[in-house]
Length: 207
Ligand code: FES
Image (cartoon, rainbow, N blue to C red; front, side, top):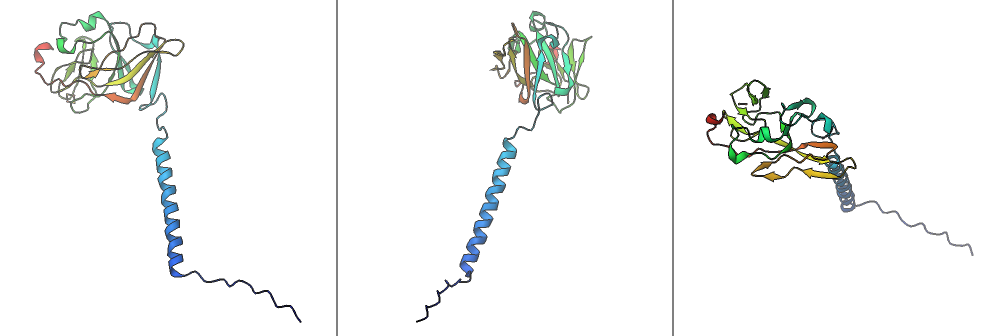
């Protein structure tokens, strides 16, 4: 008796429900892939060191001398100021904003409407050409329509071994100067801007 031919399993055509299910699964996989890519894009650091938005590492020798004129670092959009007794005890300095000794990185943009202010050595203060706001070397607003002190960038001072000596802390509503004794380098994070303290009192008498 001849052997019966082995029956092949029947291949059933995909029905409508299965087709929709596969379309849905493919859509979800595509969505998950896009969401993952977007997450990675946001998580990836987009600012390189030494460019605005990133960290600037300065040798301590680049810091201006204590109480001398602030020094511009245009690439990072900040003025570096080295505060010692002369700046801290400036008679124009309002007592409520008396600064700590040390270094501060002042954001170069006027807090009123965003103009670039400049250091005016003859008046020993920053002056904004747009509407006349004036700021002491400490960053305190002393005249004009600015209603807060200058913004600063978060900074750290580090020793020769890379140990952090001091870092910016908020004191009296703004980022205080950091201690630079024993520091070999300063790191200025231009991606972390701290608003200056609210300073709405009339100030012309102090300027
Ligand atoms: S933008 Fe500086 S005073 Fe108006």
